[in-house]
Length: 139
Image (cartoon, rainbow, N blue to C red; front, top):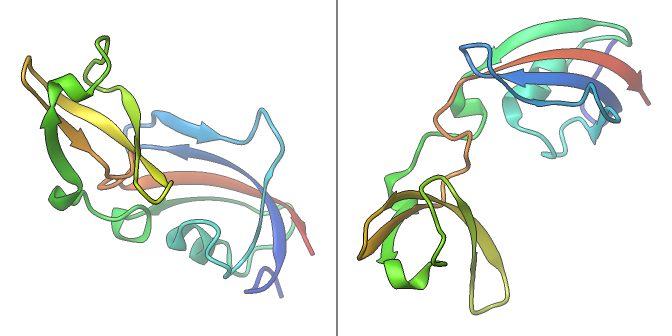
């Protein structure tokens, strides 16, 4: 029978880029627990687990379209350099607070003495992802 939509599962995973660099793993902590089909993890990850059984291991590639989507240029914007902390550097992550009390995270993409280019894309947008998984529990 295997994993199906609505099942609550626990899975150990290691996520890698196509060059083999690991960007995240659950192996040094508790397994990832989620309900299949509830949209709690990226679409491509869930799809690959359907039908697997406890103890199964699988390695698969998720194209960026089924992961964090393409890099969107409309999520990049410029601000005055003076709006950033003095010690800000390219690659730093900053929280941008909105008037409604919410916030989002941006990465500093470019920086000069007058202007900063900020990128609100997810850090994994535009990247194909490889996962190795092991099914720990299905309930």
